[in-house]
Amino acid sequence: METIAVYWESKIKVYSITHVTDLSMARFVFPFNATEELCKTLMALEDTVQRFELVTQDYIDSSLSQMNLFYNQSKQKEAETTIKRWGYELQEKVIFIPSLELVYLHGPHFQDRFGIVDTAFSALENGDIEIIAAGCAGTTIYVVIPSKQALPATQILRETFIIPTT
Image (cartoon, rainbow, N blue to C red; front, side, top):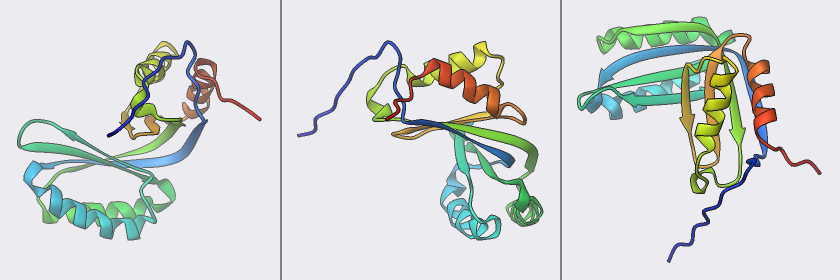
């Protein structure tokens, strides 16, 4: 038997709001049925770029997926060389976007609390922060934004959410 807690807060508490700067992104579209092969390739790519800060995958339709790889710009040349070669081998077009930043919120049991993503995205939209990509996990919301926007975005989110201190 599983027990879950569902509750609502007038001002949502989060553990922390963090940002990462100097990211680049590689975006590519590929056949959905190539996902397993792609994941094996990604494991090898991660050795080249040290690590990915974030990987997101979106479904375009029943046969196509889009994947975004976010990595530190200091590894851009190595990553682009490897990703371009890989894209060529799979005959997939790769688009590179430099100069991005990432803001993420950590919190308790986001999956049990309704409205958190909407609250975060609405606050950023009201603050004229463009959202390039986003991803959610059980306890983390990741938001990719243009360069030079991490500090304003972090400030907006700190005004929107409560971060308890000791």
